[in-house]
Amino acid sequence: MECEFPTLNSDTEAIKNIFTSVKTIAILGLSPNETKASYKVATYLQHVGYTIVPVYPKEESILGEKVYRSLAEIPFTVDMVNIFRKSHALDAIVDACIARGDVKVFWAQLGIVNNAAAQKAEAAGMIVVQNHCSMVEHRALF
Image (tube, rainbow, N blue to C red; front, side, top):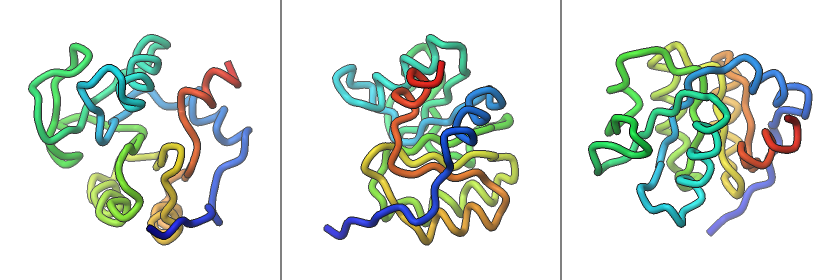
């Protein structure tokens, strides 16, 4: 396994602006398992008022929300993608975000870094966060 250090990342002020501007967050890799980090983060984000959209290959509903199999299947605007997938998956995910045309924030959770995908997201106009937990950051700022 190759680990990357994020060479592209948003600062604290940009992260604060993310949380005050986004409303709908697609959570890629949201597990129905309550012990998993993705479930805990999604629960927190839902509790503090964000609309969460589970993207997972199985299940019909997670946290009371309809599950979609891919980002492309979501029939409404997505402000942010919050990614709980392996780093190499970010290449395809950024392409899916670009294809949608509505994703403003490309957020790779703690331990997830892919600088090439991050650069591609930024070049397409997205704000990029890598290797940060959205729940931890939100709690620290609000």
